[in-house]
Image (cartoon, one colour):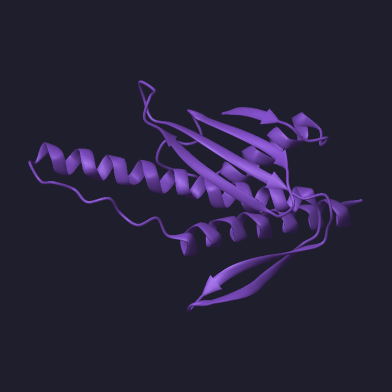
Length: 156
């Protein structure tokens, strides 16, 4: 994973938090991914696939705001619902990165499925990439981080 940190946050800490958010992602891990972390007005992320590389390459852009706490909204049954209060930039980075890493997993899994079907002579349709599942993964990583942080605090 290549990390481009364009924020004032420490690059080594950003890299460590990104690794934490990606831990457990199957289907190719985090190889071939470039993650750019920037300042922004809102918590937002975007995943792109590059058709111009020799192998599958993915680019993730994460935008982190300067002011916290902030709400994290999830679409549930057609309505937007606040699911978390993100307390600081670290939590925002883990939640966003987990969400976007899961999209990379979905892209890779879909590409493998399409290759398998093409070998069988079956035309494969592009699959929908679920934001619900990506939100669940990001939320799971945030909960793990909060538990770990709580254990470190109580151990002192």
